[in-house]
Picture 1 (cartoon, helix red, strand yellow):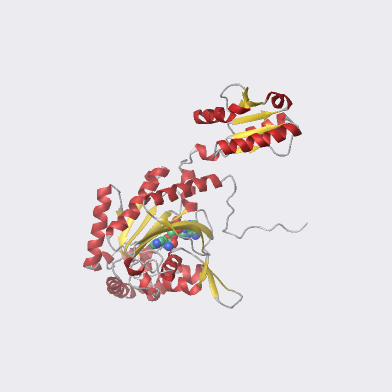
Picture 2 (cartoon, rainbow, N blue to C red):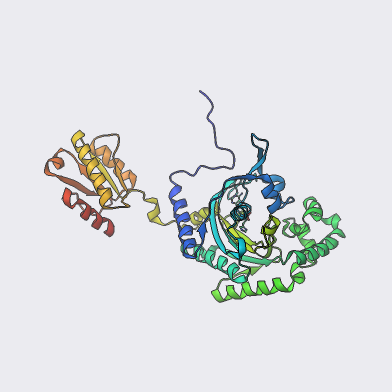
Amino acid sequence: MSKLLQAIRGMNDILPEQSPLWRYFEGAVASLLDGYGYRQIRMPIVEATELFKRSIGEVTDIVEKEMYTFDDRNGDSLTLRPEGTASCVRAVLEHGISNNGQVQKLWYIGPMFRHERPQKGRYRQFHQIGVEVFNLAGPDIDAELIVLTWRLWGLLGIRNAVTLELNSLGTSEARATYRDALVQYLAARSESLDEDSKRRLKSNPLRILDSKVPETQALLIDAPKLADYLDEESRVHFDGLKARLDAAGIPYVINPKLVRGLDYYSKTVFEWLTDQLGAQGTVCAGGRYDGLVEQMGGKPTAGVGFAMGIERLILLLETLQQVPEEISRQVDVYLCALGEAAELAGLKLAERLRDQLPGLRLQVNAGAGNFKSQLKKADKSGALFALVVGEDELAQQVIGFKPLRGQGEQQNIAWSELSQHLAACLQQA
Ligand code: HAM
């Protein structure tokens, strides 16, 4: 026997039992975003490697060690997208849809790829829903993004399990001044730094702030603080955001060490965290990236957005038992037919019901079997009602209508009254 092949480590199948929850979650986010006036954009999964190097930054973990990069048959270097912001900026520029100050409020959904060490909540193929807004520079839109995620947590029943952390990274000028001060402070104490932080001291010193190494954290207690280096514009922007969150009643924590792992951010950055999932507790994260469009060859264009990790939010819904019961039921009605003539009549009746009751989830028995085995399958399908056609029913032009979840006895219903009866019963169920 030949060896069975398996999925790539860290890349998961989403099985039929799991799909209803994914569809419920995706549907909830999509209709929420519709309600706030966001429009969907779909970008390719593969892009030129250069795109991610230039946007995310050459000396980030993602670009240095996590990208799935390969040469295609023409010898061009391509990469499976590790995130969506870079592709979205590329698409917006390529199609000129944010030219001349045009506001764009966009969202996307799909798989992302990072070669990280897989564990609960961290995968090599994972899925994000991301939102990006172009040409709105004020804190009102930063606040809207946070307000709409807060509403989503409410709809999903997970508000009590998430906290919002906020920081401002300032403008790139302010950050450069701060970076110098931080490097000066840490360089004088470099013998106490861990190896990773020593390396980052040269390449990306701000990332040292979120080092997990206790000695490095201790060293940072007296280090210069980014907040003390914020420029006036960023301070006013940040105050504007905080005032709006206060007005909306959304609790938050200022985390001066929140710097994010991608280089394109400026001013606002934020993360929604949960303590319910172990080490991988960030369920949604984002911020402002006012310099990115220009850096990618466009005109100066304000940008802000976030992405949420679908796997992590699904895990959270399951952990908190916030999976609505009705989503696991995939079948309303199961039609059983015995004998060739009854099968043909059943097929016609089923199609007529589908015409009359759009959206009806009706499963017709396939693979024959006696009534007992068909009813067993009907029960297993989760259907609320079984419809039964045999020789007798055929002769009388009726159908046996059998409630499967203890809502009364089986009765015969005339074909002509079936759709009305079924609709009424489903409404009551
Ligand atoms: P990010 O923080 O790299 O930001 O990812 C956003 C979210 O994706 C994370 O908070 C997490 O929920 C999920 N995520 C990331 N990596 C993994 C993984 N390996 N397995 C499972 N889930 C994961 C971005 O990607 C930015 N593009 C967000 C953004 C949009 N900023 C502005 N606009």
